[in-house]
Image 1 (cartoon, one colour):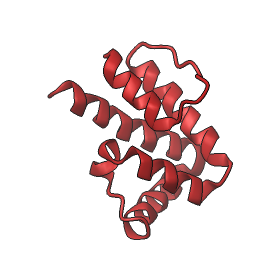
Image 2 (cartoon, rainbow, N blue to C red):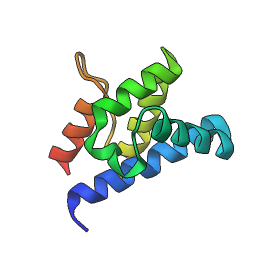
Image 3 (cartoon, rainbow, N blue to C red):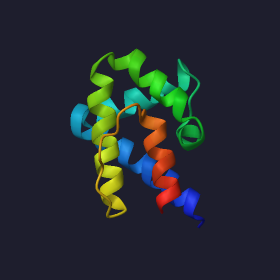
Image 4 (cartoon, rainbow, N blue to C red):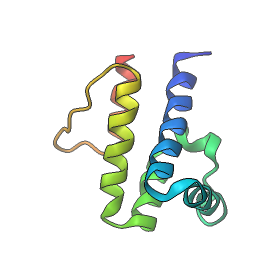
Length: 103
C-alpha cells in the first residue's frame, strides 16, 4: 500500500468514524448515500476530490461543517501521531495536503 492510499484510506475511515459519532450509523449511511446520489461524490473518490467534499459538507451542514471538518482533521492527524494545529488561511484540503507532505 502506498503512502497516499494509506492517507486516503485513513481519511475515509476517519470521516466515517466522525459522522457515525455525531449522527449514528444510520445517519452516516444516509450522509454517504446523499453524497453519492445528490453530489456525485463516491467514497473512493473523497481523497482526490477534497474540495468537492468541503463544498458538500458546507451545503449539507452549513456552519456546522467547520466543526465536522475539525473533528475529522484532529482524529486523522492523531492516527499519524501528529498534533492538529489550526492555521490561518488554511482550509480542509490544505490540511490534508500538509499531512501528505509530512508523512
